[in-house]
Length: 320
Ligand SMILES: O=C(O)CCC(=O)C(=O)O
Ligand SMILES: [Fe+2]
Image (cartoon, helix red, strand yellow):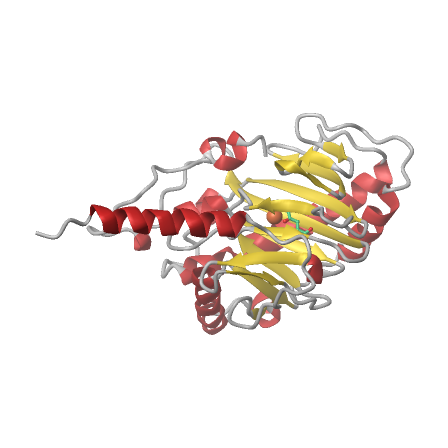
């Protein structure tokens, strides 16, 4: 009988090597290839948002599925976010605020060079203002009312869009369109207004990480500084800058609910020029446990996770 312990050993060694490679992120991104349409497709959601009919839902649901199975990053065109320009302007303006309310229970300002977002030994060269809503945004340490108005408008815009694309994710899983709605009645979210200067040589604008969210909606003035790891290609790839588009990526919660059939992909930023980005981390209602999606479970593939509420998720575990 064949002894397969060596096989298992070498397979393990290969996996560990691939893991290490996947975290060894190049700071010099100039030589990296850009994503192509199979790594990061562009989905036009304009028609679906104005008329969420079955035909559009099925068409886009198939595209979401394909994107999420491959890399877990895609662009959305015609997303209809109306507060975006004001949010970019507010992010530009916040650099000059004289008083910056320090981070309080995960909310407030974080200065450039911090090692807390994400928590890494490498610094994150971006300055951010962070809000988080579990119940309300009243406990955010707002710097002033005008800034608050813009940030709240942006968050409301994002929340509306996030809920409206949930049926595409249900469709992608082959579930009824309203499958996710009961889990997202009062979703937890975090949002960051971030300004990046050109990243100092040898550093990161934001260090390599995976998001803890269900999914993340990301608007940026320049996507070309965003780099993601394709496990299929075993390569770090740069995002294309598609002005006006939005990026959507899978977080750890969604990856777990897919029973690990969809990846939560590693990514980081090296900014070659000043840029602004506004990520929105969308999560389920705090206290509602969400089970692994039933279509991802069968006798051969039992659920790897018990139902997960926001409070039991990685996001809560990491104070996010
Ligand atoms: O700024 C960006 O483009 C990406 C930010 C990001 O990955 C994050 O905040 O989790
Ligand atoms: Fe991220």
